[in-house]
Length: 286
Ligand code: PDD
Image (cartoon, rainbow, N blue to C red; front, side, top):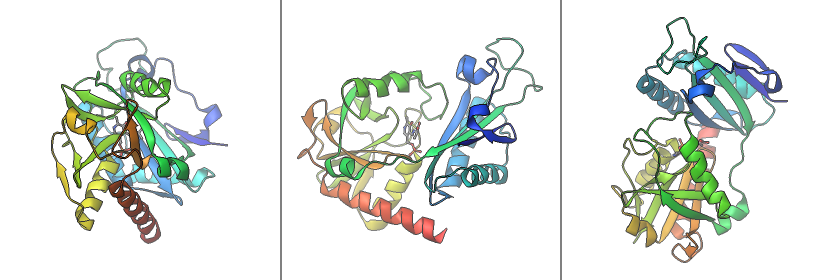
């Protein structure tokens, strides 16, 4: 049975309730995080809590918990759920007012805090061995894609677009430049150099993005953080998607055409190995 957390209370997920007047439900007015947990340790927890704080600040929503409180709540959710490897979902909304009003409610309305956990589903050995297929689409989202909000309709439409085409992800272009995936960061390899767009208001500052760049730096993989043209993506030797749940996953076909040789390339295989090794080292050493 899954244990959830709603506004200070731990309870079975099936018994968790929020009001239909909640602004998360009415307006998509909330922030969220997805935190991977390995062997009951939350990976990069402080970075996830810091990103949540940035989203809440940009939303002008008071952060209901201190870092120490968030650490304790996440720790408790991890401890109360049965799986060693988990995906913890955390959401804060602007709460439930008595009437529907776009403008913010008064200070008497408290934010709604919700957490749940699911078993962590990372890519299968088969997916890692063969890579996954992706399609591309215009990035139809708003201009604050750096905020991790629950207003996710565009991302849902874009991910469903991939599924409708038998693919795992949709790679997004805005004005002929790469932004990211529907729910992942996208890396490109060309002539032995790893390329990724710089953080901006057009993409989510991925926690996995940071880990991958740290690993590239520490192992001396050539890399450049700069704008990436759609044409460079289409002529890439390798493409990867990264996220907290997908980790580092090679994309071996884009819009029905092979990426590079059509199999995971040497840089992807290297980064997947470094990522797994780093993850296990962190989990062993704390
Ligand atoms: N999504 N870009 C978007 C639009 C995302 O939704 C995500 C993650 C990422 C990767 O960020 P990170 O490395 O911090 O997971 C990039 C999560 C996993 C989700 O919505 O389920």
